[in-house]
Image (cartoon, rainbow, N blue to C red):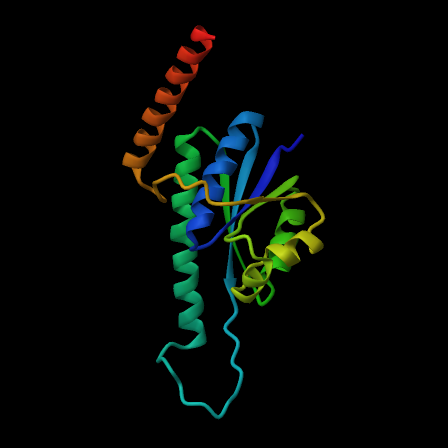
Length: 181
């Protein structure tokens, strides 16, 4: 069974849903979670262009890494609230799928969890989704999660209590249905 899961973290809304689903799965199978954020390398296409921003490559990397740490800390906080042991790591590279695959191997993970948007594979490729390539290069199974539509976001303690209340309500309704059947 899966004892270590690597969860890909980024800025997309669907990632928040994937993190929640991974936490629920980890709770059910008693697994640890390794949250992983890939910081992209800025690619300069030409040298004859005027600079668009006054941000140097070093400053970009520093700001991107700080943002990644904030996202990872929020994900770890959600896992901690659920009683799941979690770890955080930041990677970098021009190929996000390869970086995630290598991180999963290095951390001895049994499963990679990643979020995906939309049903159109071509749009996912055009939007820069790593899912198609990750599925082909990963040496472990890849669980692709879609947005479940539940409310809440990273680090919101109020949303945790709201979800707990909703969960209790669902359990009560299920019990009532079972008694009536």
